[in-house]
Length: 414
Image (cartoon, rainbow, N blue to C red; front, side):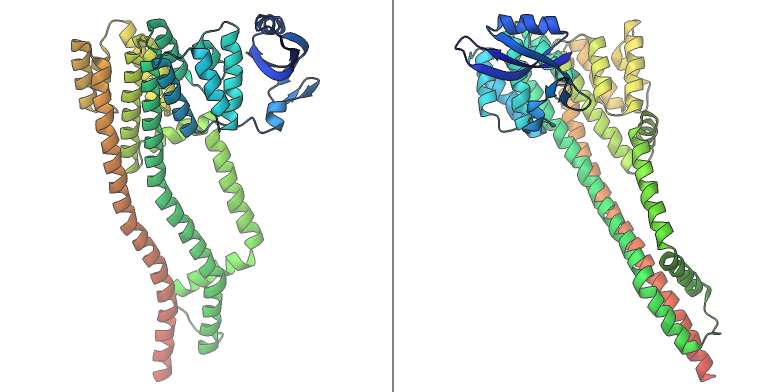
């Protein structure tokens, strides 16, 4: 799909400047003509640098770009569901949402969606032209809702799923925030002590015992570390900062991301929490797609991409192959330890009763509560560990100070 910027004249002789997403230039011209517009200029957008070939991207220049906030997406989905349920035509509902949208990025996208729907495209196809905002799950559920005539119900499911997914994300971030902040504080405290406190202590000890005084090994080690940091800070700090930058960049590569995702499931305490998050996300996403009438194999493919973890994506990809060969999904998931037995058992009940979506919603709710419990458990574990680490660091510095003073006082008395 290519984005074109155009200037056109409408039926009331007003000049309109906007953008349109179409596969090629000719299709874009045809679409504009169907909307009753007379094109004056039509230029292709260069997505790499947000400039137009022969002009500028007006939406980007005036703040129309950027990522749509999750809260805005949830609100828009719920409002659209309510209006469609009340019998409001889709185009009128979209126009109402666009005119009242406070999120500038969402406003621009809704403008493009409205133009696509006006030109005869389905709502799902119009949303699918913006994959960064409307993912595969969203588009496929809308398409299924349009086909079955239950678009309002599907949009309610989508809004609920978005809220739950955002809630899980916040829980994981809250669990990770505390240890991250404490780790940063600990590192800053360590360097602060090594740069400002330990050198002064070393000077005091040298004055008390003289240049030939024998200091304990722990004191010599602390003084050596302090001397290295203060003497070679112009090497140490750039190396540390460069190492962090390289690590972050590596984790953003496909290989680095895959390795981190695999490792995250093996981290003590955190690994269990990440598994519960993944199970909750699988249950809710798969349930929503099944409830929308999306075929099982397609559900597995879409859910796998939405999991956010390469290990679970591979499991669901392999599960799709086995289901295609005639196996039950519950039987396939029972064979992997990354899905707890309750998931396969509940899924088997859903397959027997034909209520897979309802059963998996209950599983998702259960694991949402489990994630809450895991987050609280991790917080209770981290706090004493951090206290021990901070206490140990302070204790080492105190010992490196007190031991030589005790030895010096003993030598003076003798």
